[in-house]
Length: 218
Ligand SMILES: C[S@@+](CC[C@H](N)C(=O)[O-])C[C@H]1O[C@@H](n2cnc3c(N)ncnc32)[C@H](O)[C@@H]1O
Image 1: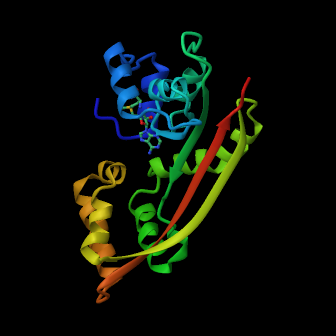
Image 2: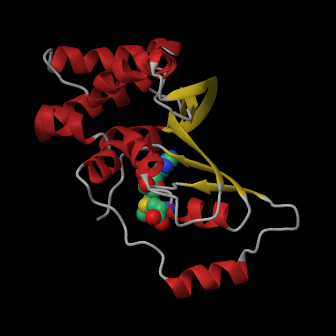
């Protein structure tokens, strides 16, 4: 499987693929290992997928929050029949985290990025497409009857990297590397090194945004 991105997980569930349900011995083992405390406990199932573990915990008395960043998983999890289970109290949350580099905060990094446009004016960046999606995510969640309690957190932080760490980050940006081709890509990295000059470190600002939206009871 080896999925990494949110899109891959979203397509996985969207295409009807899932994981096998817990069998009786696994239910039994979980009841032994994580019995709900007297009066019920509160559990958080991170990466809940279709909610198999969340439903088990809810059935044993926990109040459960399940979070997953694949919208298709949350939609399908809510559609799963729960009638064979005792009344549970599962709540499901959609959560997503996005933390791109905030290049505008640095004239040096803005200039290095501009070199990309000079080398390939028609460059298609995966990050730009995602930027558009993320810019409208809060509005889309707020407008959707399927979610309520939309929460958006945003913060910036600085990371200081050695020049080679900074260059290493660019080396891992595959879409740029493939579109530029090896020769232009090396020219681009040379340009970056030359602009950084004698500085020993490069400071990058990251912009982190986190969304959480509770699945409405429909
Ligand atoms: C291997 S599946 C497990 C699903 C479920 N817990 C189960 O056992 O059936 C991993 C799940 O984690 C979710 N996931 C992976 N990275 C995530 C992230 N950064 N934030 C939220 N969910 C994430 C995926 O969408 C996927 O549903």
